[in-house]
Length: 163
Ligand code: GDP
Ligand code: MG
Image (cartoon, rainbow, N blue to C red; front, side, top):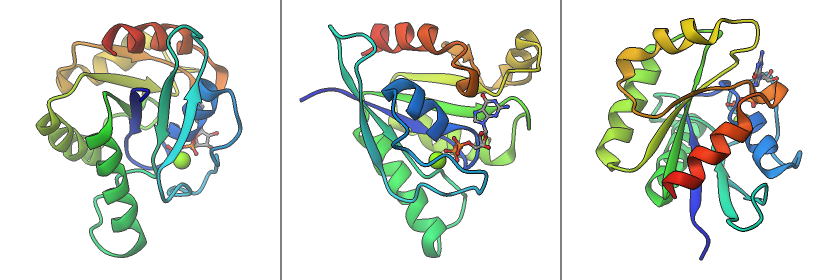
């Protein structure tokens, strides 16, 4: 069985955009509306052919327990539980969010290798972005721009180290 890497974070931070970049597909729906991906969505990452792995896109953790948003959140936690490595995606454009802190609490309990992926660093100083998320306390932090495929090779190298 191939190892799985889960993309976890609140809606609209760019998880599906990163999924498409890692899997080189447009399989995942990318949309301006938060919460477009409601279930779990798996794809192969073959960017490093000698070490393929599976990427799981998730709909995002919303902080809701009820209805569709609740179901979507539970799917995200399921993916995190199955993952060998978790990529916690946050948004440099909006900065840290209370929901990010909540998600982080849940992720910490899983005790798995994690990377803080700061997306949407295009049009922003990456040093500032890293500084804004410093109190998240991550060992592995990577600023990227999923939309521009910036930082994705570095992220891939880090994931391969952690797998
Ligand atoms: P998800 O809900 O976390 O899966 O987020 P999506 O991948 O659907 O992206 C949400 C929105 O953010 C879309 O409008 C994307 O075009 C935009 N987006 C994604 N990545 C980036 C990025 O690196 N930079 C910028 N500026 N926008 C991005
Ligand atoms: Mg999505």
